[in-house]
Image (cartoon, rainbow, N blue to C red; front, side, top):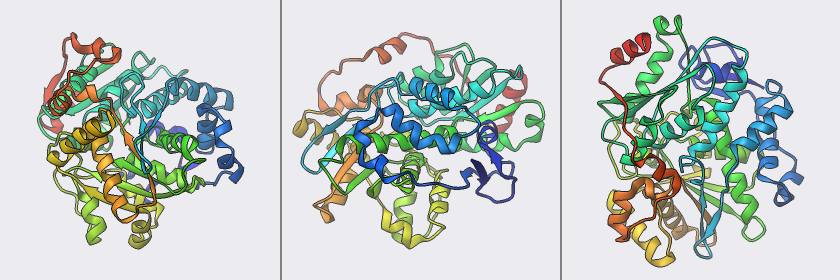
Length: 431
């Protein structure tokens, strides 16, 4: 499989080069040249397959031939070493839990998959690769954990000061070894802009090999299509016309789901559930796409004002607004609406949701108002204890901390504060 830049001003590259480069030289995101649908029999008999078998069949065409079949199967087995339960709420709504990995967030899958791919590509290379990643909360922790101890790979994480939860900050600033954290006086969008600028800074790229572990990287983004297939496996015999409500920030999950749909997965519709960072919600109602500075909310992993992956979605639909709108709805919800949803979920279903999952639940309810026969699955993207203060204040009940969270609580934060891109550049050149 070859990958092309969405800016169409750079040479096509292999999967290996797309992973290592992260971003194309023309600042474009890489996108696969083709998407070949899987046989109908695959989906008709999907419940007879393990998660690893499903994942292998779904992603092989995007990786082959650069990672041998036997190696790819091992990478997938190691990536998917935890469960993805579906919890049914009522006759129209269920949730897919994506928080059972080591950092208790959905990004564990993409981070672990990418780390293993990069480790394979770099196994005979003595040159160090620097993974540069911006995070609004969960990405940094997942990437840090996934790449911890990987040979010849250094990870530098940029996160916005005061805009991630205390536990998220602990997870990305306490590992040490080959993991470094930079606390940015700004927003996630500022962090993301610095990362993209670094890739195009010739003074940096002449001296070091940079790559990204944000969902702009194909190896981080593509494995997210697995989630939709795992949910379908659990539900397709009981429920037709599956609709997915995805808490959306950088739009990697929704875009990956649309790739799964292109592969043949029978998905009726997608819902992009937004917080007050509602660029896409407004776009779908006005046809005007206007990125704006992000605002801080209690669902901080979605605090993105300029979602990188939306350009991939537009590419999938050949920039046809009407065709996209037929397959994607979007709703936006405030902090207060999110808290009310968390309380409703707890009181009605005895289920503790994190703020991001609650936004996804609200997306289901909004869609079902006009589509009452649909069956809607929302993603619960992070364990509620990652947002302990908010969750306990809403449900009025002390939460039991899982081992993954307990293990970081007493550790000492280590982070370097930066303000400008020049600060980042100086750090990279001198660290």
